[in-house]
Image (cartoon, rainbow, N blue to C red):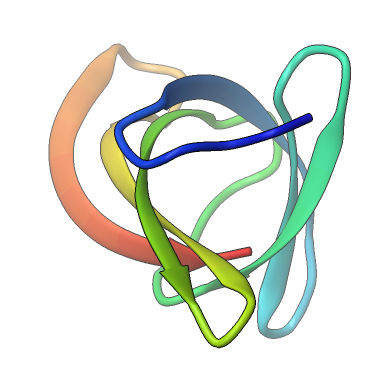
Length: 78
């Protein structure tokens, strides 16, 4: 899948590791270095901000800790 700046994706957190999380975006899953705590089964909506050193940079637009989506601003590197 080709991601371009400005793309908005919605996914579900499948797995949380020490410094990364695996997020399912429908037909594909990405392992991302995260700069915040995420929870398994949490729904996130992210925007592709661009690339940095061959890494896709995502910004979390919305999070849902199984209570409804709330506003947060967190960067995620994939």
